Length: 618
Image 1 (cartoon, rainbow, N blue to C red):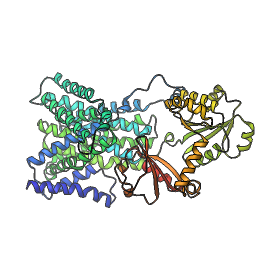
Image 2: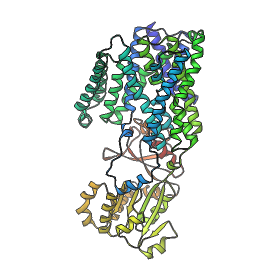
Image 3: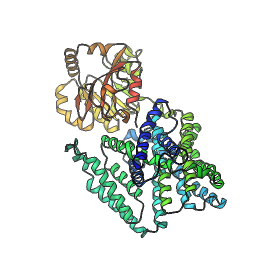
Image 4: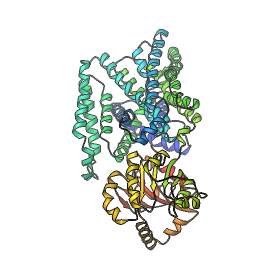
């Protein structure tokens, strides 16, 4: 019977995502659907799954792995203070930044959650519905980071200020409740030891980080086909910190959460994260979610009047605990987006499940109360993303195009500027040559400078750009301006060098500064070679219907997918892949990897969609 129950669970875990894709169910997170299916398969309806020691073990491993992956999802760069020694360009950008930073908004927003959570816990106590203020407060202040990340990915907001604000609030919504749960469990556990012993978990975590901080640099030298040492390290971290946590009287899930944080800080390769996700979400975590639904006995819940009253009260409590986030978000973002962000922050399920499991082990909550909190959390995951998707619209600061400034107007730079201006770039050209200005001014946006003196150029905002292209014929002048542009803080500087002597002398210096170099002979040689090896190259480069494009693969959905299996491969032709500082000529069986630079040809109407899909940060 145990094997049959496990077989039914695994079949459900397989069918659920297939059915969601088939019927285009996108408004519900997969985890919520798995819990709902678990309710149907359990004693609430069909009673096809019975609890057993095997399922209990797998469920416990599932929650441990879930918390481990949650720890890995936290982006600690969000918590970093900005450097004080800013470049002139960064200082200028800082002055133009909105009054309220993302970090400040997130801090105010989550502080309001903590205050409101304790308030809601007190309301439940005086109403007689739930007496444990501390446990209620921990539950109310939780946010499901995984669901928030999924929603932000769908809208391509992870790198935008609005998305970072919501992401940081959600990260705090996992870290703070986990810390609170640790002290709560230590205070009420019959096996608890001195609270000071909990610090041993942090000490061990720090020692593990110090010991393995160079691991992923050495990792590249190891044969990974049969060893998978990165995965072995991850499981070693999990077991070690879970064991230490339970040894000092804390909960094992805290150790798993810290293990995820340690692995994250070690800066693993994207492939490592993908494989760990595959293990967790491919096997252990679906079992945990489905079993959580199985253990949620609706028949018992609906026969208890007090529990029926508790469900809507808790649901409203989840909403009210996050309500003040709206006022923090509206300080910088549109009102509708502030409502959307608040709705997304209401969603909670992951840490709630972990907290309820710990509270049940400590006998601090009844099955009926636990079911009410869980069912209310499921409802937040239904309505939160729906409201977010309905209300969110792009902020003005997110619609800014990348700025490209060309220094020098000639027959090489002007046509390129014209083509870029039709796409995803805001292009401006600068020259001090009046003849060239008169010749090309009607063709594109050109500013006439008094001189190419650096002070004059800085005063006219020539270096206030994402990309500066130095396209003049004078290599010596380009060399000087390139150094000034990099010192000023320009992210990308592209320089033309026609004098090979100057280029050979200063190539290493410019490469160390991050300057990108080109010259006409090299470009012509490369083009001629391409024409000989692939006669259709020129036709593609000059075609009005199609062209050559490049995009960095950021969308993990396409990681490890073979080229022949890319859904829109019929719309593009992948000609080169730049990976690990070398070019790869792909075949149909070549697998794509995260951070690949993919060079492809496509029609000019379909290319933007392809670039957007492949470059989507998730």
